[in-house]
Picture 1 (cartoon, rainbow over the protein chains, first blue to last red):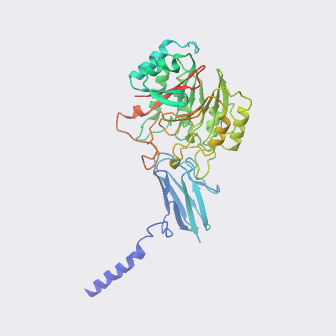
Picture 2 (picture 1 turned 180 degrees about the vertical axis):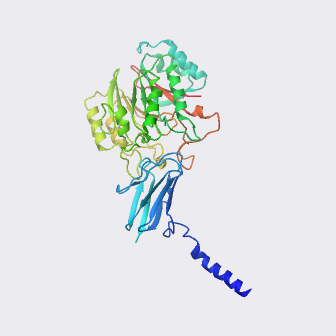
Length: 113
Length: 313
């Protein structure tokens, strides 16, 4: 009984650490960083990752979009509904990007070392 | 083809028929103020009473290749628009297509659009929409088909029966955070194109994205439009025909008339009435009433062009 209770308490204590970092805006994403393109917005608009991680964008809209780096360092082909684009960020820095079709759509990837 | 300078009453009758069917909206444009009048009454009393020097037809946003819930077959609705043009009792002199011919700039989509539009038997002038710039060459596919004699990303001008037509491109090399954009090179070309033309020359400008800000939050405007409009300001009659927003919007400012045409593919929400722009799925049976074409009549001696929007319903 005591041992069970102790296990439960330990499990509970361990839980917060086990839960993946919830809002990606605040903490580096634990696994497979994703940006969803939905309703003409990039979500999250600012995504924090660690150097070396790969970001995948997926278009959830029924209109095509693309992902174009402001400094032209990366650019996806046009993404139709459900299509994805991935890019790996080896170096720390802030990478601003936008949709080349609908340039009012902007976002950024914040890469920490 | 009948003499465009002496239109038969058939055309007037046809327009009246459209009015009675409730499918047309005539914008009577006098004294710088747009007023929507009942078709039939407006045509008898307004500019249409004078000889129409010529008419042309505006198509926009065909999105050939689009096949999603908002319209499972955008080719079919473009065919319906073409059938409507073919059935017109007085043939327009030509067609202008104000962009988004295709959904994804695929060769097969351009091929299909060409094949469908060829049925009209009319010369057609194109300006690209952002959906026509999605090939690997960012617009090269469009230029290869439609860019003959054009400049830069596809801008051009020509004269027809005393009216100067200008096709502008505001979907190339767009900038982050911005809306549509003409760019310095095109504006310099426009200045040169207009230089020396008498202010009495009627001007008709075509461009995909509106050249006035319909709704900035959705990018429905052109960042550097003001620079182009400044060059056009000295002319007595300037009509600016756009697409992109898939609904009719109109503004009159001084001697300039701005008008957007309906799409032949799918409607979009009115500005600010939805979380975002994009294809709007409407209840079954309502789609055709939200798609359409625009008939433009230029009447000699009348400053304003007469625009008749009719739906595919």
